[in-house]
Amino acid sequence: MRVNLFKRLTAAGLCALLLCGLFTPGFSEEYRDLKYGMKGEDVQRFKKAMFWLGYFSTEDLDGSYTKTTAERVKKLQKNNGLKQTGIADAALQELVFSGNAIGTDTAPSPSPVPPPTPVPTATPAPTPFPYDTSGYETLKEGMSGEAVEKLKKAMYWLGYFNSENLSDEYNEVTVNRVKQLQKANGFEETGEADPMLQALVYSGNAVKTKNAPKPSSVPPTPKPPLDINSLMPPLNEDGFLSDDAGTDEYVYTDEDEGVWIYVTSSLSIVIRRYYDKKAVLTWYEADVHASPASPLLSYLNGTKNPGTMMIQPVKFVEKYGLVLAFNDDHFGFRINEKDKGIPPGVIIRNGQIIYDKTWSRESFPNLDVLAVFSDGSMKTFPNSAHTAQEYLDMGAVTTYAFGPILLQNGELSEYMLRDEYYSYREPRLAMGMIEPWHYYVLCVEGRMGDSGRSKGVFLNWLADNMKEHGVQEAINLDGGGTACLMFMGKKINKSANSTRSVGSMSGFGISEQLMVP
Image 1 (cartoon, rainbow, N blue to C red):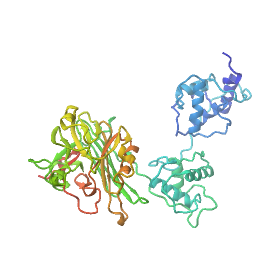
Image 2 (image 1 turned 90 degrees about the vertical axis):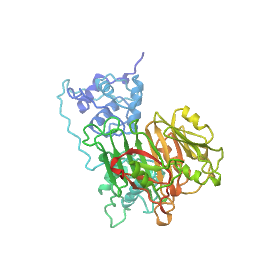
Image 3 (image 1 turned 120 degrees about the vertical axis):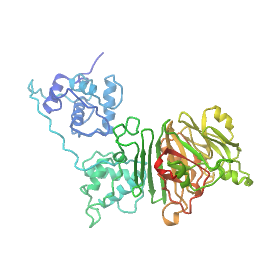
């Protein structure tokens, strides 16, 4: 096979690397894997070595492993018959610095040959980035939210926007302004605001433009996003309490920050509160990792007709000690109001058939079903797809009947694709499964728009939010005045009026300290 003269880094080329300090004998025994987002002198050395193989058009390269770097590494891997991962692992770096890697036709001519035995020199440690980058996530086009809005307002005070009246959307204009900011401050012009760029902006030391407003010389510094990992106790590989945690039950609450955490050796609950000022919206996201030792729990009040004796949600917590408690399909209300002609739906709780009356209508609620199985999985079904006994035969232990289905097999349900289906803003509560034993509960406040707190949401907002979080199966449960999310005995979502009494509740975790004798 014919090989172009410059498709290999020749001995002279290797010597050029030696002369440039890119490869130092005695210092190459161990390499860390280099990948997108990493920075350091080893990244810069590797990129310069790739320049001599023709994979970069200039030797003026920094120490950032960018998307461009990853693409060039894929070309290098392809030419050398390697899997195209875009990651420079130790083997690839060894190959490049060995002088035997296949280059491109555009590889530069080697530099003059240096002395045959250069003296190795220690590589100076890179200067660490002076600002704390923890708690920030990379912001990019298509994203929206409070973090985006804060960054844009900070950029206004640096002169990169002409007005402080800015949206929370990371759009094409934002991309272009971020590129200007990156260029002025010596960053690669990606248009994405990574944690380093945000930390620089909020430090007050970013380079401004001549149009920066005065007298504010430093942009207002928002509080960095909360790092949930910093609040967690020692965890094992399953994400539960490790043996050296020093406690059997870890509880963390901070209502001001909007964070609630509960972790044991078999259960993890993390609840976050979010607020969208532009949309006048407050909501709560509960991420739950359960297990066979701590499954989804369901409780019914009443003995003769289970689920029909209504009590306040706090009474359920006091009676059963539920750590995370929320309302379900509120089927008992439909039983008590049977004169209105709405059947309760297919209701199974903890392996027992409670009711088996449904319909096939598209009214609200349409009584679609979310079935919970003993293996920790969940699956949604149309309202009249199966009888209660058929669900039991399939292995279901619990079914909820309310609806409509929000997500099925990870995709929006047919109702979510129809704008006319009960399209109005209300308090909402929905539940779904990301994967077996990994669940997601979403609670949205509403009917408080006049106070500026929360107007409520449309049904498809629930579906879009849950899809974004990787939920595969999800159903809308009872909302309005029934919507209730409780943690360690306290209701954390706000309501316009008093909380409605219910005959059944579901949740995760039991804590004896919550039970009232």
